[in-house]
Image 1 (tube, protein in one colour):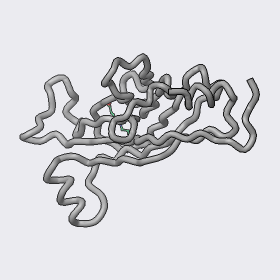
Image 2 (cartoon, rainbow, N blue to C red; image 1 turned 30 degrees about the horizontal axis):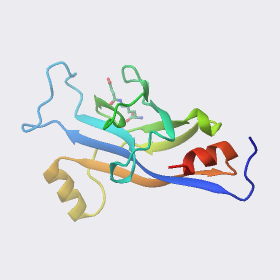
Image 3 (cartoon, helix red, strand yellow; image 1 turned 180 degrees about the vertical axis):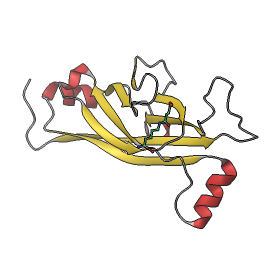
Image 4 (cartoon, rainbow, N blue to C red; image 1 turned 45 degrees about the horizontal axis):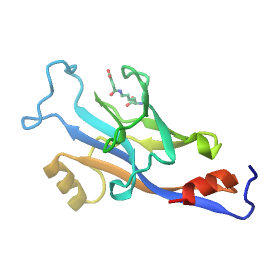
Length: 160
Ligand code: SLL
């Protein structure tokens, strides 16, 4: 199969994290160490939860190496499941999110970087809202672009 000159394919996705602070309404479970202040999830998903598993085969989340089992591979999703992983902790750090594409693509894996936000940020109104909901969301919209895709991948992606 040849690469298609002058052609590209793109698909939108959302990635990021949601963090919650332990408090009276959201107590720290007994098995969680006492110095852990937050519970959080990092994810990759389609816009409005559209399925992305037809082009995304596996996601590897590389967390801080202070975290148990810090390299997390998520694949073979069942319908309705999301590429995501969760942990508890006390600190912010950079998460590497590596995308592995379906074999039809013949493309190498590609990495994205996400800063885990645990603390309210932005202007006063935003911070107030984050404190009230006890949810710090740090989400980003992006598009995966494949330039000069293989003909077979182009067909795979454009055939209903
Ligand atoms: C910092 N550079 O010093 C960062 C590192 C690492 C945070 C933050 C997990 C701890 C655990 C955790 O929150 N690590 O699982 O014991 O701020």
